[in-house]
Image 1 (cartoon, rainbow, N blue to C red):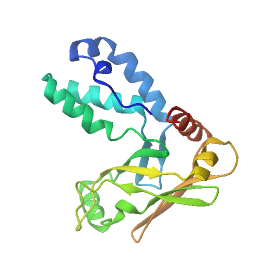
Image 2: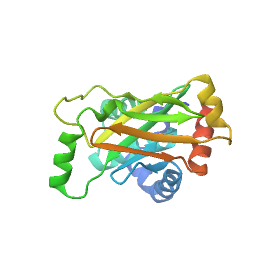
Image 3: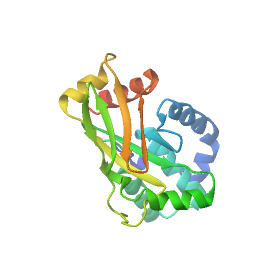
Image 4: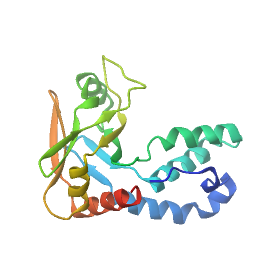
Amino acid sequence: MKLVARAEVLEIGKYEELRDAFRRRVIEEKKHRRVALGEHMSVLFENHDTVLFQIQEMLRTERITSERAIQHEIETYNELVPGPSELSATIFIEYAEREERERMLVELAGIDDKFWIEVFGERSFVVPDRRSERKERTLAVHYVKFPLSPSALEGLRSEHGPVRLGVEHAHYSASVELRPEVRAALAEDLAVSD
């Protein structure tokens, strides 16, 4: 999948003109990329457009206009674009009450590498983002990659057989079969990255 190029990133004023339509399109696309993983986690599978949207929104929110800062945002967020033979995702740990969230972020320490995707019974474990690894607690947001073997790639592209997403940690375990529309979106991503 191609990375977001500087030429695609609009200046704030031009983005404001197109934002409503672009935002609606990406939000609709995200519906087919978001997976609830138990009661308190969700996983958003990223692609070129979701990353471009995040870059544009960051520039807009932070009012970033210097070329150097824009390039920094592009380089940072491009790390979320999946490479060949992998899926990329943002994992959100979601507890509504602040006190419970803080307690659970401590209890869930070490969860970073406990996520997996299983295609036709073949389980691929996540490659976590180690830049901000903390031993005593975890983060509420994780940026991860799922490397896929050739057989897992083929299985994900096909419409046959189950594909499951899961996590196994002493304080939180869940798994879910991916909905057909999620599988279709991921298969399309993988077709683009060939």
